[in-house]
Amino acid sequence: MNESKHEPIIGLEIHMELKTNSKMFCGCRADWFGQEPNTLTCPVCLGLPGALPVPNKKAVEWCVMLGLALGCEIPLFSKFDRKNYFYPDLPKGYQISQYDQPLAVNGWLEIKSPTKTTGDEDTSDGGEATTSTPPRWRDRKRIRIRRVHMEEDTGKLLHAEVDGQKCTLIDFNRSGVPLVEIVTEPDIRSSEEARIFLKKLHQIIRYIGISDADMEKGSMRLEPNISVRELKSAQNTSEVTRLPAGRQGRGSSDGEGIKEDLPNYKVEVKNINSFNFAKKAIDYEISRHIKLLNNNEIPPQETRGWDEKKGITYSQRSKEEAHDYRYFPEPDIPPIRWTESQISQLKSQIPELPDQKVHRFMAEFSLSEYDATILADIQETAKYFENALSITPGVSLGLSRGSRITPKTIANWIINKRADITKTTPEELVKLISQKSQVVQMDEKELEAIIKKVLSANPKAVSDYKSGKEQSLMFLLGQVIRETKGKANAEQVKQKLVQLLKYPGV
Amino acid sequence: MKNSSNNTNSLTDKDVQHVASLAKLALTKDDIKKFQKQLSEIIHFVAKLNELDTQDIEPTSQVTGQENIFRDDVVKKSLTQKEALANTKRKYKGYFVVDAIFD
Ligand SMILES: [Zn+2]
Image 1 (cartoon, protein in one colour):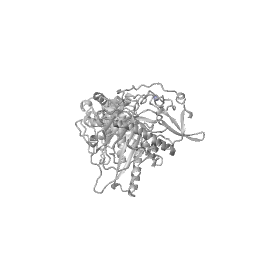
Image 2 (cartoon, helix red, strand yellow; image 1 turned 180 degrees about the vertical axis):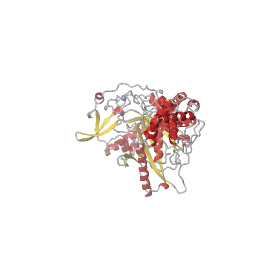
Image 3 (cartoon, rainbow over the protein chains, first blue to last red; image 1 turned 45 degrees about the horizontal axis):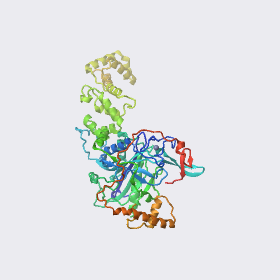
Image 4 (cartoon, chains in turn orange, green; image 1 turned 90 degrees about the vertical axis):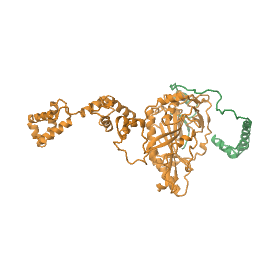
C-alpha cells in the first residue's frame, strides 16, 4: 500500500433517535425497544389513509438545540418534505424528512486531531490557562457540519422462515420515532479522526440529554462515506485549514458545500453500530480503493454493507434508481418559522458542553488538560467532582492552606478510582480524603516522645520487629496512633516509627 | 424528475420505464407506448403554467398560511396489536409478513 500518495476523504452521516416520550408525528410511545411487536402504533405511524401527522414540539426543539451545540446557524424558516421510496419498513411509501430547508446548517465540531498531536496525552502540567476563554489548541481540527435535520425512523424488519418459507416480518413500533440526521462535510482524513469525531458527537448528545445514543440498541447509527484521492507529488495533504469555508457556503442544502478537488466517486457504508466498526470499515474501504486506484481503476460509486464477522464491506445492490427520491414539501405539515428570541431561548437551555467544561476546570481549578478531560468525559463524573469541591472547606475560595485538599487531590482520587464514586457520596469522599491526608498537627518532638514512650512500653514487640516480624510494626503503629488521639497522619507516624526503631539513638 | 425532458419535449421510453420502476410497476411494451403518450400530454398541460408571468409571485409550498403547528410531547393510547394487524392477510406472531426482502 502506498499511503503517502493517497489521501482518504471521509464524510459521516449519523442517525440518532431522540428520547422523547412520544413519536415524531403521533402520540404513540417512542420507547419501542423490547416491546411486543406492533403494540405501539396508530393510523399515523402505520401510514393509514387520512391520518394527519403533527410534529412533536420537543423533538423539533431538541434538534435545534443539537444544531446550536454544533455551532450551526438556525434558519428562521424550515419545513418538512416527503422522501419517496418503496420499502416494507416504510408504510406510507415516503418518509417525512427535510430536504432543502433543514433545521440547522453550517456548523462545526472541533476534535483533537490524532495526526497533529505529539503524544501529549499526559502533559499533566499543561494547566497554564488562567482565563476562561478557551485557548485554540494547535492540535485541534474543525470538522464542518453541513446540516442537522429532523425526520422519522422506519419500522424494523426481521428475516425469518415461516412454514418453511423465507419471509420478512415487520414491526412498526419503531416507525415514526423521532430521528435526527447529522451530516458532515468530507473533512475527515483518517479512520481515527472519524472515531474521535463520533465519540465527541456522542458525548455532546449525551450531555444535552436528548438521546441515549445507545449503539447497541441501534439508537445511533453511522454511515461513513469514503473516497480516496491521489496526491500529486507537489501537493501536500489538504490540511489547509478550511474552517470558514462552510460559513460562506450558506444554506448548502443538500448540495456539495464547497466544491474542491474531491474524487468523483464516493462509497457509502450503511448502518454501522459501533465506533470501532466504523473505523474498521473505513480502513477496509481505504485500502480497497487504493488497490483499485493503483490498478488505474476508479472504485464504483455504490452503497456497501458492513460484515462485522468477517470485518469486510460488501457491495449491496446498486441503488442508483433508489436515489431518485422525488422530494417535495410535505403538504400535511405547515412550515416552521422561528423568532430570534425562541432560538436564543433554546440556546440558553444547552448545558455547559464538554469543551467548555474542560477549559473551565483548567482555568478555575488549575487542573491539567488531561485531568480536566477525564473528569468532563462523563457529565455525572464532572458533577460529582464539582459537588465534592463545593463541600471541601476552603477550596472553593482558593484557600488551600487550611485544608490540604486541593482540586487536584480530589481529581486524582476520582481519576485513579481510589474511591468508587457510584457508591461514595461526595461528602464521604471528602471525609475520606481528609482522613488520609491529615497533617501532623503536633510537632515532631511531641510525636517522637510518644513513639519513644510506646517503644519502651512494648519491648517484646520491638524485639519481634527486629527479628523480622512485620506485624509487630502494625501493632506499634496502632499504639502510637491511639496515643496521638488521631491527631497525626498515619503515614508520617509510620515513617517516624521505623526511623526510631532502626536508629533508636537519634 | 431529473430525467424528464423539458416542457417542450415528450417523454422518452426510458423516462417512462424509470418512473414505472420507481413506482414498482411492471409495464409491457404496449403499456410504455400508451403511457409515454398520456404522460407527455399531462406534462404539456402542466407546462401551460409556464405561460403565466410569475415575476412578482413568492414561491410557496402551501397555501393555508398556517405555520408552527406542533403537538406537545405527550403519549396517547396506541392501537392494540390485534387492531394494528386487523387488515392484513399475512401475519405471524404479532408481525406483519411480506415476501422475503434481501438487502
Ligand atoms: Zn402512532
